[in-house]
Image (cartoon, rainbow, N blue to C red; front, side, top):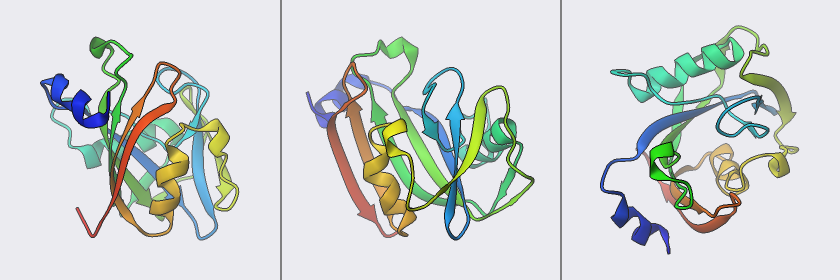
Length: 170
């Protein structure tokens, strides 16, 4: 089964979610997920909007909650659909994620119950400890590209289908 075939079986919109990466000229802030979905993986901050909350507001709130930082001037750099056909649909793993970059924020990243943040050099991102797809799309957005993408994972969280398209804007 490929992404197009799987999409035709869903029957409802994907759950919305966010990922935000804080950037300096030479570093990226990643956070080690300590519990829940993605536990044990490095990623940006993020999560799903609360009822009546838009995705951008959710990105700001999630970053505040997860690393005690308030991002400013968020730039939407990717919209990525993630599909997990081997996970029961009621677990709600299928999702559309808006990815933001922020080069300005208030506060100093701090560990919370959910996330342990750390700065990494842009030329030494720990892709082997992240979701498999990150190594495909993250270098593109860090190089200034905007992308629309889709990734499908097998029961071992390995990519079994992917689509990545560059966009001028969203």
